[in-house]
Length: 436
Image (tube, rainbow, N blue to C red; front, side, top):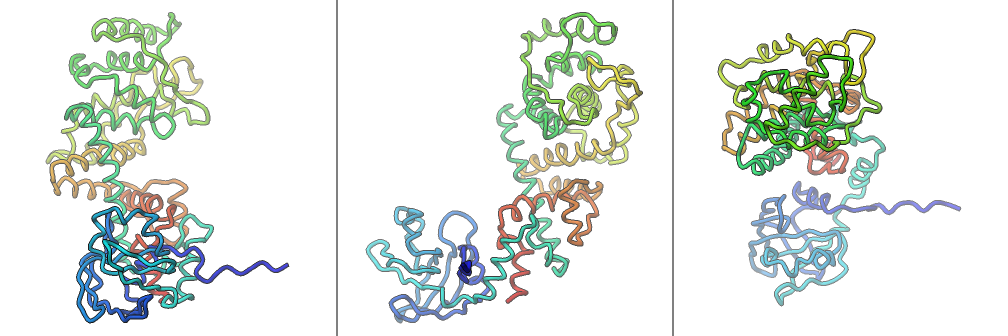
């Protein structure tokens, strides 16, 4: 038995209709479903926000010139499925362009001229687009991206990166609101998420939500006392004496700090250890977070005239207490000597995932373009990240020169590739234009 061939316009998408119209692949003269001529004089402005698809368009229809919005749908009945008939924003729609006409549209008591586009669309071009969307690779354009103009690639990288930073900034600005504008508390929370990584991000966030930044100042930024505070608050300190004097002293110090700050007995945070490299265990990461906060106790120390990337890396030279030279976990002593220093790779992750997004958020809050530009410039000074996603992009022939590139392609993967939004991407649009 033969398998039926797919329809030449299988899985038609509204965004493809937008692309074809905007790029004039359909021409500018049409016949309505009532067999009347309609000419588009001005294609208007493509609207990426809520409301009709093309604003301020101009058409000639029925001997008159009409100015208003043009709406697109795969099926004309989608107008009612999307509940546009009850939305005042669609009151000025002057034409309805659809792939498939299945019902007449009456809006505000008047028939809106409808154009069925099925006969206007080039099936060869659409099949190439459909094949692009249905490729098995996560990077849909992996076989075509090498032919993209460099300026198109740079434009999309910048757009994707700005969008990624914007999304991260929204969360940080919400933290600022939670902390009633206290930037240091919000800064600490952003750092904690980075030290937690993907696996322990939530427990780190819960821990930091219970610690007040002003407590560190009250403890005069003493490394031992703050380490006792954090490890005790995390519920990681032992409940009985051990053979290690340093560990016993941490317990005694936390008992004192509980009375000083009115801390109740902490509940378990659900720390995870399985299938993790020991260097990422929460115990050592909490100690390193303390070390970092002591070096950079406020969010104001970055992007100052005397701040440099070289001086930032120098904070890596001093490690933690010698206890951490043979401990990844408080309860387990290692046979080999370990390095308790924050690695160069971790310092870069702190910049990429905490410091830069935090200051970009402040730039958005204050409308300070200079800070935002400094964030983008700093990303260009950092090495690109190494992970499976970046290996996929490099396999297409893409060169990663900095963290600016790796962060941009991570954003592009999430925002466009995985969601198959090729027509929201400058790269995808250029590929389709080349196929026309």
